[in-house]
Image 1 (cartoon, rainbow, N blue to C red):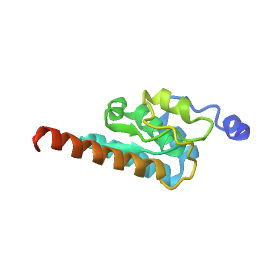
Image 2: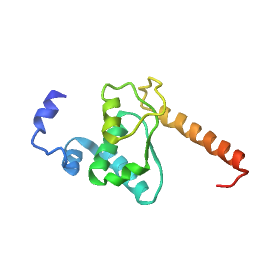
Image 3: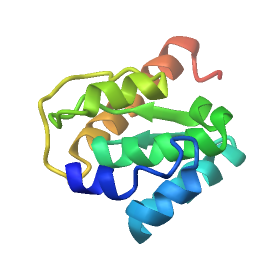
Image 4: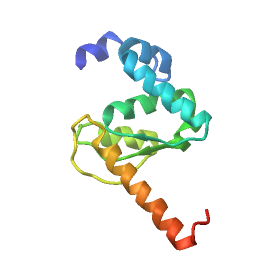
Length: 128
């Protein structure tokens, strides 16, 4: 990590495109695009773990309003997970200690959201 930070130290912290093109890779670029595209269409994105948090940080730098459409699923076990969520202005809904990389936290969060919607509709008689 030290070598990477030293190699790219001249890239300004607010140069999201420079950071993404230097250390991001194709997958990260796609996730940033998904976050921005979802926000542009008023759709929710659930980030799951440190990698997607890093992508959300890039998206936030490009379009800060995109964070209105981002939800953190859980606090992953990676060392930088908590600080990255704090930098995004997000709070994890659960801390499961997961560090699996298979969207496990996001899957759990989707189940929780689905249950919350069903409960809301049941209480309101199906009226949104």
